[in-house]
Length: 445
Picture 1 (cartoon, rainbow, N blue to C red):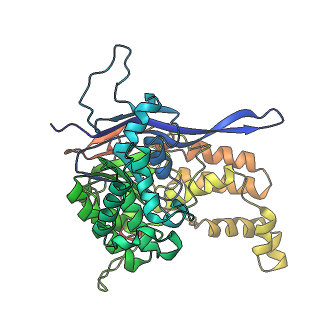
Picture 2 (cartoon, rainbow, N blue to C red; picture 1 turned 45 degrees about the vertical axis):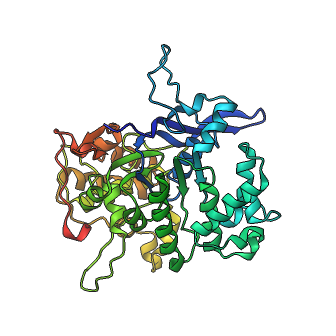
């Protein structure tokens, strides 16, 4: 079997939270929290997820632009052969243990393309000098040779050799990203990490840059870690895809398989956001309630359960899945103390109704789209009792009632990866044998 060029093993990057007069550490923002994947020679792996999920932090940690908190980044390129682990368990090709000399050698073999091309160049240097600077740093002292190499690369990215002496402000965004590509290629690396390389560009330019990246990858035999929030872009350019949510990888596999048969609910939601050009196709995206939780205080169990449309019900309940999702959202808001009775009263039109407990309860039901008639008796009674407590101003008691009845296995169990075959894996407890996946009605897809 082909040896991976890059193996990321349980990589973590936590930023300490400090507060108080003595600047004490009181917690940590878990931007990247234990991700693992392999990248093979000549392969393009897409890392996809919402903004803030940790994609860019993973990229900078892999390239040691930031020091990881924990984990391994094993790089077998740059002339390094496959090696066995040391007696102490460390790996000789683990980038996180490299000294300055080894790190410099590694960075010759691994380069990065940044999201904003305008901010990644020194405005006081010509673009040719910015590209050639890497050659100088790595020991090429012949100025004419440096210029010849850079001019050749400028032409390979469909610019002119005469652009060598021009300055960044003289180029458009798309042209700057072409120059960034030339800079990434100048040391003839094995690996390029592209962090949202087209998201800052006009749609008309994005396709040109993606096509250029594809051509250059084939020409230079590159491995590419492509980071994006755009699923359609990932599908266009990637061989495999890893889906990230709140610092963790929740699904990974062959791109075509993941797109045609997603196994994690978050992947389903992302795919539902891809627009279709067929006017005959009725497209209803999956709407995720609430916002992404804070990485400083991620939810217990599966981190996606607070927004998941397929969140698992406990054995003692039997509800329509959409009602179950609304009840969990209601419970969460009550636990957060987010039900403001004064605002509820203000939203009721008539003065008489504003002081009527029944009107208050009806307004809260309407806000969370909780039906008056819930099929499951236990759920129906719990909601009624919780509403009574709420309108009486006893939010803590209401939260306890809701938490006792409306708990999900998803918040109690951290899901392990399930292998679906051919390297396709997902982390969702619905795939455990003891869990029966909830049925989703057509209206929810």
